[in-house]
Image (cartoon, rainbow, N blue to C red):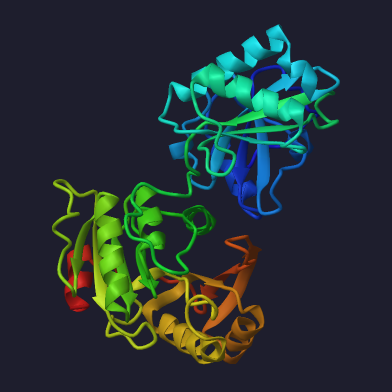
Length: 395
């Protein structure tokens, strides 16, 4: 269960997770699994400097959770408070020594190439002096546009106290930039959004998954990262997309058995699981009936990829084929940006699917929705087939 909040009492070292809007409940749920973490109410985070980000504040006894284990968070930030009336006071000896030690502690854990300070009035003399002092303390050049050691200066939120706070991002890149993403695809789904989709659905070990319109393989890679599955199958009509998926999934430690052949340059020596990639029209596959428990899909949104006029027919075909592939009582999650077109297609789909919740998120200037659907029927599960049987029948 997600944690409950009491009055803010930040008695230990404070931290913040930066998340996409809409994903904060999932990040809080992930935090709850880590010992020593005490969640704080959202107002303890104050405002972010980015309308496209939200914050999840907490304190932690001991080291904070490894960001790699928090798959719905984009960054982890150390929050260093200073009870001072103005930023100029941070140039004082005691404040400077405190912050220099915090910056060095972060830099020791990773490789950074430049310092980026984000603050209101970034070009004022005071902030320029702070940038120079902090850069000298960690031996990094001032890089206001692309520095990867990101430091933010903000007023302390009233719920926590007074004064100013300095936030230090603990990694050079956002965690949404996964190490396995070795090939980018236009319109690719944000990995943190994909991870949240799987936490929303659940990930039992006997789950049989089909990813229609799989693109570069983000949803499959994030499902595999959360534990074993009985079957993982991706389908796309674009051969370039399947090649990208094969490369990314191989980099994620998975074996690929696909219509285009394996990706030998990315194939791991000991794979955690095997993903089957099929070159086929996702609205008319030759996969067997009722063979899957979960369907996931991130169809084109009609701007960067695809055309808006094509979406109604695409959604109709996706829902029709999905109803054939997913067992009664199974689940689907479809990511869309053309909300009215999808809702109309769902209404026209008849009794095959029923809506089971909608989650609005943020990605790259868009506000897409994740639609969770339930396959009509009594929920009875047909006898489980071994993964090899399933894949053989799909050949």
